[in-house]
Length: 73
Image (cartoon, rainbow, N blue to C red; front, side, top):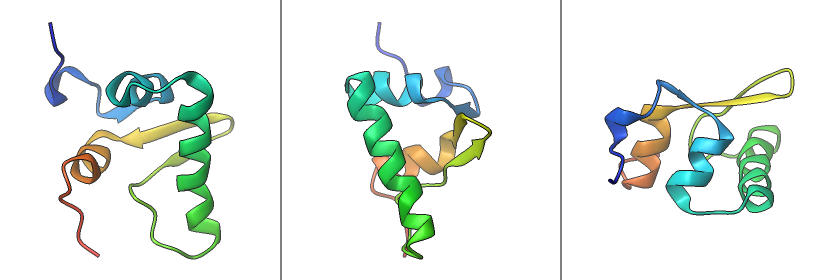
């Protein structure tokens, strides 16, 4: 059975991103690190990503808006 957006928690973790995008663990973390790096380079990231210590949390709405092409710049 395919999961829908509503099946995921409000704050996604890298494992959720990996599942949704069908990436391996290494590529998932590489992708998320690139998204995070854009903040430090003062560029607009694809979606919001919050780091709490070593944990990465991604707001579900922000991620799915990006995935569905609904971002506004």
